[in-house]
Length: 416
Image (tube, rainbow, N blue to C red; front, side, top):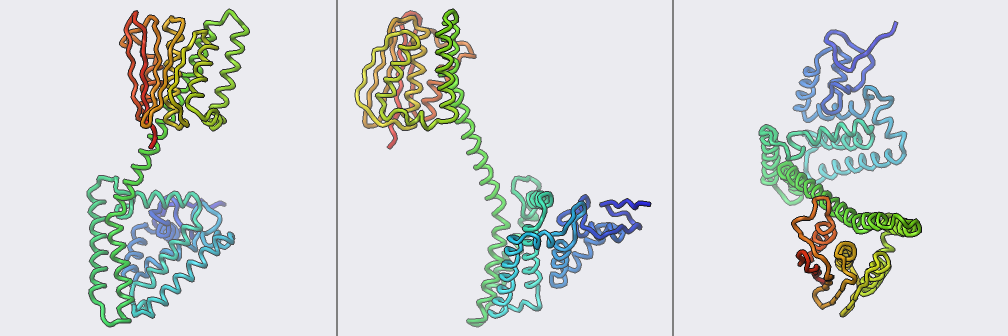
């Protein structure tokens, strides 16, 4: 005959063995475990621990002791067993225990009577909390984190619940008052060191309870906003590159569909460039050490891939940084657009490097276009030119009309 045990307390039916509760726990499951073992309601056990807490903090100390010693329901070992099985964790806990004892001795030496108050139970309970965190299982640690985040006093400040805010403010005011009261009643020279230290710690704790949740919430929001902005910038860079390289190459393949050799050459070149961009981006950034060299590569690629003559004029040179690379990428997109769609037999590229800015002009005398008639799925100008330039603080101006050619003016400020 088998006996089925439940993690919930069944009134009038004691259950063995004694384990900390999992489904009926709030923090550590100690009260839920005793309620299940004794067959009584959990609130009665919690009331007993709360009353014992009034007796010099004994309830908190007993709770932390049982939390460390008792095995949690559904697990094979207790926290103290897991700590001693791991040599590194055992060393951490031993050092924390020695530090707690030294702190108690130091407080007693400086005049704080730790033997007749809440000091030693609270310090030992804090040590127990450290041991719980070091030896808790991953599932229990996740539960503790969720409880801390949702706690009305020590949790985050994102909750709009008035009750939670009121509890936080009341607890903070009580701690601040206790700290100020302790510091105020200082007598003697040597005997005042202990109360002053203890009162200052209570005062700091009260301020942290009052202000830390809002500060942590602001830090989390700023971190999340920064992460989203970085992701958006990376996505914009990837979309722009795919448009500049892959989509342009697909257009060339479509035009050269009748020539198998050209199709193979274009596909291999694009595959090599895409692999280099995905897996070795540093080689692309370091492929040329001059702005003029990068613009010369545009001239070579446009003439080689599109058969359009490029008239290149350069004035000055500089070492390319991320802004200059963005300018070159936008200029490449403008030159390719001119070679593909203008119908002109040649295009002109003019560059000028000045102390405060770098300029690049692309001009053709082709058919021009109506910027308002560009389809929504054609994002070359919007993403690869305008957005790319704006991302790094540059300016872009496109002057065109049907039948009068197109001029693209790109100006990028230099990094100071």
